[in-house]
Image (cartoon, rainbow, N blue to C red):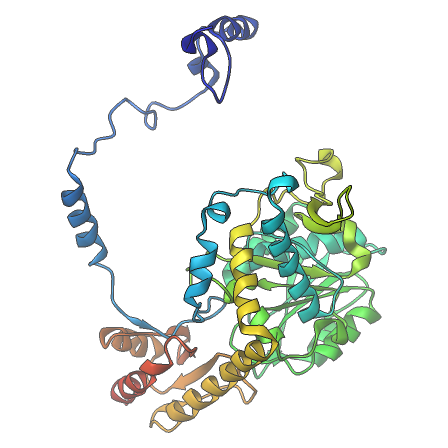
Length: 444
């Protein structure tokens, strides 16, 4: 049979087979199977002028040069920790870059073992029994926690309680998830940047499915009452979901010890650096919910010769089991990002991870003290322990302060009429002197 007769190697239909299928559907061509508006249909011309490589490189460089070149002191769920070059060198090996999902264990044992180690690290950091590998990001992890609560909680209920201080984008994703299972998302108050436990106690009732809290919070505050929050959830048979990240978990109380049923967050605080939206959603829960975990797990066993072997298991998604029984529609994972996270954590080791967490507290404290010495600035606003970042009050309108700092070459968040937020890690700590001088100039 000729190559033409075989058709495409990716859709191996012969012309005769294609014709038979079109006849069965009573259409003349494959194009008749699609309804594409003329306004967006491809007319055969991309409208891109052909140019040589040098011209294209010059054009791309000219466009990129239009970006603002700012020193970023930005945080609020996206954190830039230094990633050792060894992570790049190892993760950029072709067997990792060209791997999609490790469906064939006989050719993916190395990658599967690395992912198993990633899961094991999260289990050790949280004290909970099962970590998946993985979900898309922190927001989808929270959405999956809410739908898990709807499946496992015995009593009827539809309320998901979240903190007043929470990124709007994360809440929007959560609401998209909960709308599909008829749950409602409601807010409870914060007090001085942390959970107002008295107000939360009044809000929690028998209709509450899930209580969500963060430590550190989106404002960088280390939550001091996690045990109380866990107890409130348990008293009302609600699940307690904690949002955090691997660096913070290295020194905070283990979530299992404060009553957490699920831990979610962004694991890419290790291994990736700031990616402006790209991350990896960590999801860790109690072993009793093993068969309710979204996505997939890497399991360990033995092959027929008695050697330790790894494979994907318990893939409870719609593509692998009957759709009506699926726990999630998570269809892929950030295996390569999880690999980088595991590499970075392994390179740091337990002591290095704790040291990085301690530095995150020290740097935030020192930066806040320096800004607090400036007339017209009070930092931190919240009289709490801070992790990586903090909120500062400015006598001048925050919008003007942020704009003036940007003109001076520094980017910070505006979070209120007179509130800015500053995040300090090892990647921008050397630029702190310049930021302090710029704040002193624009805050008067």
